[in-house]
Image 1: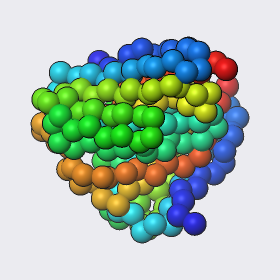
Image 2: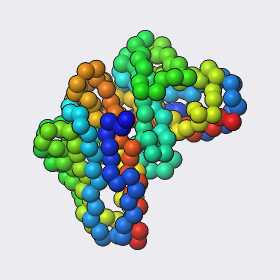
Image 3: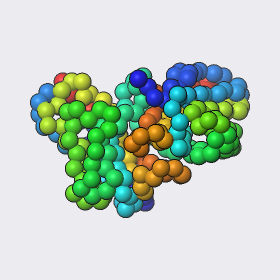
Image 4: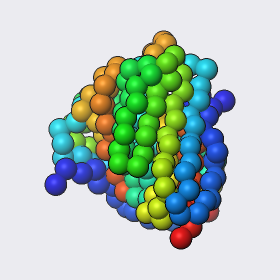
Length: 116
Length: 112
């Protein structure tokens, strides 16, 4: 089954304790992306990757790191989480970052993170 | 600044009524997508519109891309409780570096 998986689904942590949220896709997609979703703000892009070893900042990259060592995995790293990073996080992938056309993004189920 | 403005952000109507959700911008998009999100799940693509003026139908849902490719609408005819959810528009900006943006979302509730 074609899917994007994220782990963990729920995480409660304390300020400053490093954490990693994993993301994996089994569709051989080139493009992967991380978003955070907050009430009234919709989905905001944190980082994206057009292919292995190619990553770039989205709209809200501060406090986050990513890596793309393999095509299927795109982990999100919070080196020193803070309460303002409490949010719902989504990983997504698509075939390529094409300019137009049916470039559907497939989203993972989300990770709800609470930083106290 | 929100590059894609969705309105309304909240809408609660009775079963059987019609509704329209709007997605507006001052920027031009190469394509625009509509997603639907259920609680506890990620967004799922409903449709992509690419050509200015394009109209696509998905059963009782009608999607339109503005002639100037700056706006889009989603119209639901005879809404049903199963249409309840969060509707999101997103698009690829056509100017400068390729940039994918999302609207704030419209939370739709259809009451039986």
